Length: 416
Ligand SMILES: [Zn+2]
Picture 1 (cartoon, rainbow, N blue to C red):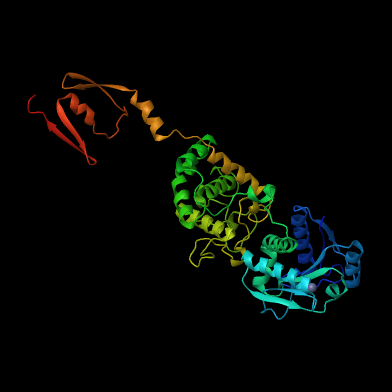
Picture 2: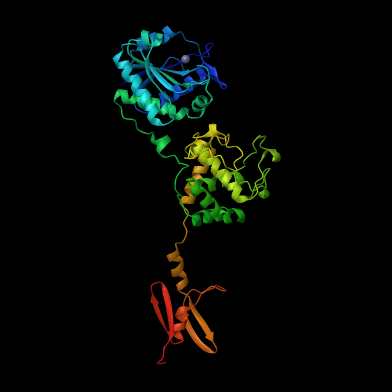
């Protein structure tokens, strides 16, 4: 079995670099543990210099790895400079050929992931952990903790970073990266085409005993979401969860035109009615929800400059690509996203009679017609007050009906 030693930098009394409310020791540890989980899913034996917030000497880290005799050693850090520098760089020991290869694999993978494009390249340095380890070793400076944009990446895109670093390590080891079935391939993307129809949305809402307003708004949810490239079923089910199918009952009511419990710019408590946004109309409210979702999902063109979303903060971009990952982000509850994902499945599985089926049922009707005392019987769709022209019925009166090129010509037969 391949053995990998992961070394989250700093710890305990040594916080490492600081910036934007973050400490390097915390970011390095949480990213490293994520990398370790991914590697374990690929049958790699993973060892750590630390898995908690403790101080460990640099030489001790190297010695621990040497004693186990792992195949490779990867140290995880965050950079800091003057607040303006940004980007990723990876290191190996000067002259270490395999280390340079590992370092390059990790860097290439981070750049390929698209998390960000700022590539500072591979470098060499006489770092203690690179010098004192006797196996292939690399050190990753993930991003600049004192740069606001980089700090957002460390905060909100850490899963993507961890995945990219893991891919780079696996690639070096000649192991093919496979998305974890349990956690990745089954997740529900926010960006995408509609996975159900407006009719299914309406039928599902009806079956749930939704407020009539919620049922009536299905087409509006559909069109606004579609335009932004967001799956309308995501928006609709999220609104159902947030508003109790628009029956509300919390601090909001239907007059807020607020489909998702959206707060005002300043925010405020969940129980404070004034902390919640009152929209002009439903179109504006739904647009705000869709823009907020699209921002979370990292959709093209977001953040937008012109949006009714009062909390359209750029740092949110790309922080939740899937419905499941909204949990703990859009709302504090960790099951928030999986609850919505279940509702999405329900909508997708909702059966709506197709137009053909509905027509067949109705065509069984025989309609009795009394025309100036003349009794006629025709087959057709009987719908009281419906505005149909009963063309077939005219045949019974002796008219000749011609169907051609999408038009109907009706002539009275001369020989009659
Ligand atoms: Zn460091």
